[in-house]
Image (cartoon, rainbow, N blue to C red; front, top):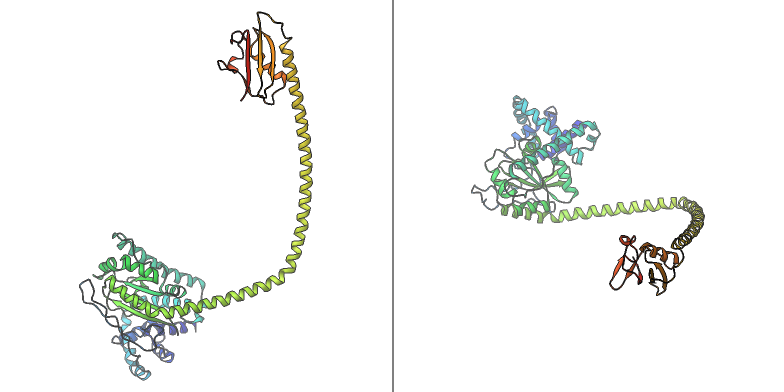
Length: 474
């Protein structure tokens, strides 16, 4: 039953017949051979225009689209396909049904081609059901078959994009429509979800007008920017199964071929505009701008409806969230009380630990300071003892005056043979400085008695018989 429903939906989407009873009769007459039924139907209706809707969704009556402006490529311009009158009635279909059956039977000799049509039709049928245009009952199939079908359509689209980039990406222009790398029905769903129209380009690699159209129009900076901003773009090559199937579905009779479509109701695809033959960027822009303006009310209405659904869904979610929050409020309060109690206990333990650490650090600092002070006192005492007794005045005795940064002065006599180190020992023994890094300096002339002069005697250093030095902190 799933296969029958898919075939019926697909046959309606391709042929444009709205009467399900008539479609069922035609498929039954062909033993539900989908490819044979479609071939038979199209072969007997080559003179019938496309049965898709060619007016915007806002229009209630069919209108005929005027032919476009002449092409800049120098060839005869092809008119946009006009909208056809309603399809023949049920009586006429039944009368011509035997002819369709006979004509379709003759086409069985093309078995290989028929198999290709059938395979492509299966892909398209599944895509219709996957995005909501086909029967909902067809979604219960094997998940592995779905994966293969979707990936095949996406792979074909990606191959077209890569080939298009190789052929026309190096022509000096980096602009081109941003074709989506997915199947046609996925691209149609993307356009619906983004509230945009779907721009379709069917690529015929062997057509002589194709290179000029791709380079001059599709890759035009103005045209590609307009398409990328206002449309979802999908492209397919006639060498691919889906591109070939779409050319039959859209009844493309001349290339290059472009179309603008959008999802419609009743499992239909609305064909808003088709452009056949080479066209200049200006002609294409004029056509697409007109279609965009005519379709704007429908797109705006769809967007507003979606926003309303989103708002309602958000309100329901907010209400559900508020209800869940009310249910969880008591548990949250209990959890907060428990966490608060645990936090207070942790803070108390942390404060006790810090207090003990501070006490230990204070005791350690006091002990270290006492030890340092004792060490300094021993050092001063040792240096004072090393100086010996102060000598009496005499010819070999040097009088030394030391001035400290605080203004304090100290004076002492040394033997002229005593070293500069003795002066530093003398200053250290006094305990007048809180720093250990200093130098003894004389003013006139300025001489710094640093580590390089510690071994000189006072007489050798020129400080005999008397000298005035000041302490310079480093």
